[in-house]
Length: 113
Length: 108
Image 1 (cartoon, rainbow over the protein chains, first blue to last red):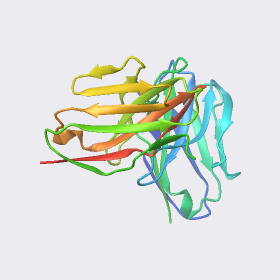
Image 2: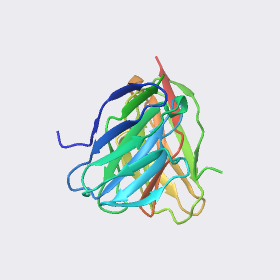
Image 3: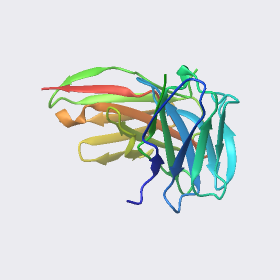
């Protein structure tokens, strides 16, 4: 399968713990996006990369959130000191070249208890 | 104001009917446009791109009106399997922005 893959698919964590999610984009895609989606809402933009450069970070992303794409391939999204409000589906997408559609992974569903 | 706005619905439509959704976007610098479909608890998947000249894919027709900054999707002869959330998507400077989605329920 050469699509976008995300790991883990599900994560349950206790409030206050740190979590890290991984996204592997389609190999030739140089743009990688992270979104958060809660029930009944569309995906909300969090951040995106062109190769290893993080181009924009949403105001939705507090200081507890950080994303990296160290070699321009896979990306990680870390949430520190998780809160119940962080419970959501975290979606990763990739695209290439400019102005084309994005392809999504199956998402990581985070539940903070 | 959200950059991409859609009527959240739900639209409850009998099987075989025609249904249309509209979406408006606020930034005239937006460059490309798409409709995505999302099934419950699944990831969004591209339904079709949207072009100014209008484009059709089987029972689906998409249209872009740049002057009025709106995008439409028409579904003809709706099927039960069309039940889903339809997301309007705008690409502006390679930032991909989603509307909240319009929920469609096709009734038998």
